[in-house]
Image (tube, rainbow, N blue to C red; front, side, top):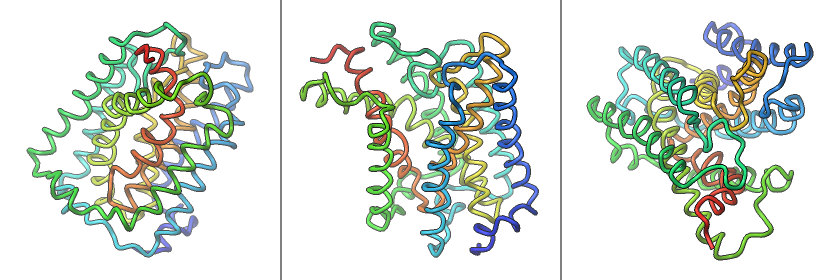
Length: 328
């Protein structure tokens, strides 16, 4: 793997896989803005998409993808086949199977039971709108479908968590964890998109933060770690030469995981179209950021800290869980 493959866009454009992946994102982005321009009803999550794209998601792409790939360009390659028990001969088939499994289960859980990757699914949370039972049903369901069952499948193929954990280089990657955690944790607070301070006691913080991390880990964090970072990314990585391509397809995979996030609305054709295209447009970029942490470190848990459960989800969700669990 060389720097030219990752950082010279003109060379990447000649790659058919890159063209396919970037075309999917460009088509979704084009149609989102076309639908908005034509006056289609916009779902709650897709309101003011241009501002969100420019102020939130493009910075993620620049800082968490391009900058991090550049800063780690001299690192040794991750031995995906050895650490993740991937056979190149079956990697393509298994990557497709994981994608199909994700699509089918997301359609069943999201469309059938309103369970998205993040609680409370497509609903907009308000005080009293959801119960503790709702939280645990979501967390347990996602744990079984996206963590336990896939890990059983992986174990039968020779995957060893012990071997993977022994390969982590936490001290080498500490600067990545600290810098990107701070950006993702304080960013939503500073721009006012997360209601984290005010009206919450020290006792409520002390209970609500770890409880939120626990349930979000079960319902969202570990499912993404296993499905995307332990199954999908390593199999794509043994097939593609470019880290940037692996990151791109990792981002597209994550966007499928996000199809039933809070604020999407598939009840009508117009809101469904704006929801779907907005999710692909924005969550592909978020997923690319998540994928980059694994691609450059070989550690599927780095993103869990820097760009997911222990970072932004804490200011986003703590108040909600304090209310639902009636913490005093």
